[in-house]
Length: 491
Picture 1 (cartoon, rainbow, N blue to C red):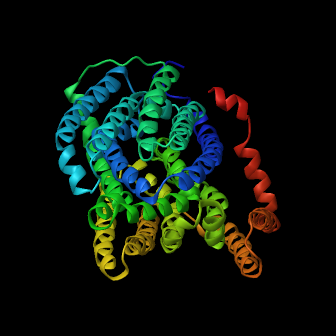
Picture 2: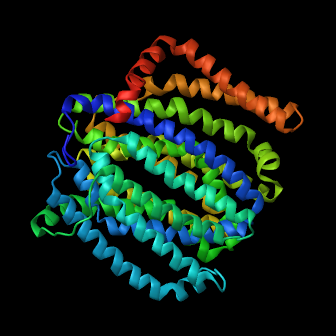
Picture 3: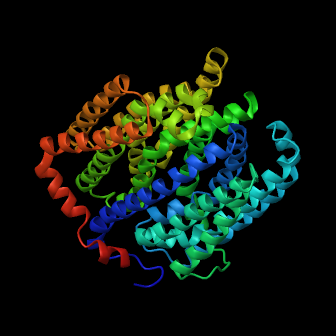
């Protein structure tokens, strides 16, 4: 296969399924590493440091979203193979926009630091994060190549390096007493190294070039798609964007910490959404095959993510007291509410990817815009009544409405889609296992040993119940997912 060549169509289904498996394995490795690092950082650093990091991180993410133009999604979604001209056009357009934004935001750094109460060093917090954003944008082109060819084994290596280097550096610097600088310097180092690794694995050399006709064609799809992602950004980063203006940096820290902990299983939905856009796009002219692929994706999320969500809720007070320290107890109500938000993402993420893969980016944009506007409006309303926890409440309420709206929309476009038979057994098993865990927690005294025992017991009970309900089906699915894993890693 050439550097930019597409894979054989007969390999799409198998490689997409194995791609999800690879990314889930990557996710497991990242979560184990991330959990250890998060425990250390939560004990070493203050909620205020977490709040400052969340606010400045939103600038990096904004830079990545805006600079993309939606051109990456256009290349992933198009039917024909991408060319060198396509890639150079995207690379050139993105870097021109990134550099323009960097200059503007560098100049605005003093104003932003004062507005978000970041203190005397806030200007340099912001500017360091902007440099990290430049490295992140440079990684887009090689990532397109790897995603287009569904080479998720290599993408996993890049992301493990990025995440692992960030966590390791942040913990070392926190132990050394660098405070909030631990986060900022770690981001900068991790983005730089992972960008170099991405170019090496994709075997593509950065090159400038611009084809106005190709840019116009890609932009027609990319603009509504990227506007849709901009609404996701505004909603997903509402805590630092809005909270940073209206509540203290410490309260932003509580909210963002709760969002991260509740999102440990929820990030599986983002993994599946990432695989499904390029994979589903190949099925856009085959509604029956697309329906089956969507069903498999959502079923996989309900089997893996939903029991984790419910177990975190059942054990949340013990997790905070015994693992992260009592200073995070004010975040407990937000953790409960944000778990609802992340649970809903197991439906919305793959379904929105389905809309985009079908070329319905404008419809996805309309749904997302309404969702984001409602979240902001409710956050402002609840903030005055419930304090900073009101922002978490707004997330949970609007997620319920959004999930219902996306389900109705998708069923109109894919009437053959049948989700309930895919999720009812995993959902029932997760409710029974986590319900038993919650009941036992009320009867037992908190200790690390008891916490670990409950976690293990809940996982075993869940697996046993699900196996009793769907053992034959699970055996078939496991054989499909793990078929030829070594060969898939090389592809």
